[in-house]
Length: 64
Image (cartoon, rainbow, N blue to C red; front, side, top):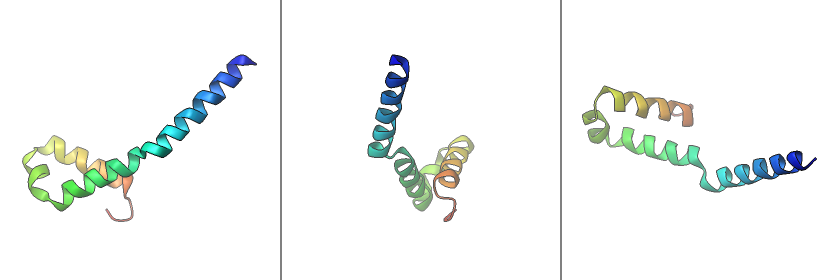
């Protein structure tokens, strides 16, 4: 019973933190900025371009 309560409390805390930090929104904002200001991500090489495009597609599928 204690393990269930601890697991539920940990899941609740993790959900709260993710809701407060909003990592998807931050990643999406970062990717949108990188795509909008093309100089930095183009100079970063093909690996950086792939990461930026992947993050942009995952976080903003309607605008990509």
